[in-house]
Picture (cartoon, rainbow, N blue to C red):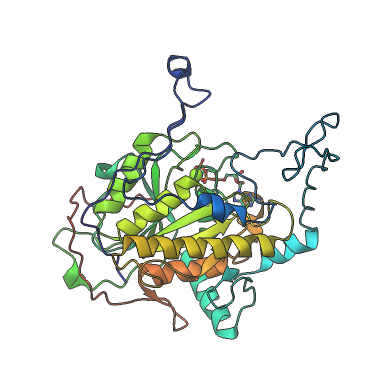
Length: 402
Ligand SMILES: Nc1nc2c(ncn2[C@@H]2O[C@H](COP(=O)(O)OP(=O)(O)OP(=O)(O)O)[C@@H](O)[C@H]2O)c(=O)[nH]1
Ligand SMILES: [Mg+2]
């Protein structure tokens, strides 16, 4: 289903943190990190109570070590302030994920939580799903090409025919790695352990040549050579720039062929206020959204329980957002109730294929972009809903060769 466009959209203000290594940082040494501006209408965040129910192995961002009281100062019991107690030992770190667990994770094509599997994760694949996963894999690994980098909306070439999917998330959450895993190419988008690596919106084309009837092309328009455009974005939060957020949201507001957003959240962190803000803004923009948990192989403990718990919380959060926004951005129509889980780090990409949950994500992205995966092949559905928002008219689409 094509996205419904919003009557109005807030301009995002990504957290601005002056880069530590910026030559100008001295001039801004008094600047403090700024959180995204929240809508005045936004209800008080339920973050505290929600996060409180997360398992203890969810680290806050940035991770903070619990510090036990010094042994020579015994803690006082809250109910009886005069009774000293022995200091409690620091909480034990969860054991790291075993090699065999990681192995399972990296070879499992479909890892998700559906409303009916809640609170567990589904990791088994039916025969028909396996066929669809393999069709989706060949779609994503056929005809890959880097298209362009755009600093702002006006730098995106005109596109009237090819569906676009935007990948959003905090800096370092794994957006570029995720894109690389989708196309099964470790070097497609640049990845770094240091947050703030991606500073422009980078568009990549995937898929076979689309089946667009010639008559629908305007005179002078070239026949697109790919079926889908994936847009990698700079992250919000740590080391991000307000201007990046501005460009991203102008794109979301105006881009005619945008068919949905994939919001990545790190399974080793808690849901941040910025993540809530992003989800709410996508809801207000009535942009179809799917949420994917990344880095399932990190964080220690049982990844299935950790990711399952986080997915449950997320679905509750999405329900709340959809109720409070009340514009039809509902479960299924606006947001995907299936929360996918991935492990798509660079080190594993060459042997990922469809593993690490990537196979299932490909299917959901194609569905969101308007493709039909019912049959063995991937077909573009006819779009019945027409776009009513502003049409962005820029240069002709430039298909870079090489
Ligand atoms: N273990 C593990 N590491 C991952 C995974 N995904 C990404 N990483 C690592 O996380 C770091 C950040 O990955 P990127 O893909 O550059 O993250 P990004 O969201 O594009 O970051 P920015 O461009 O800075 O916003 C890199 O060191 C990746 O190798 C994952 O699923 N598992
Ligand atoms: Mg990146």
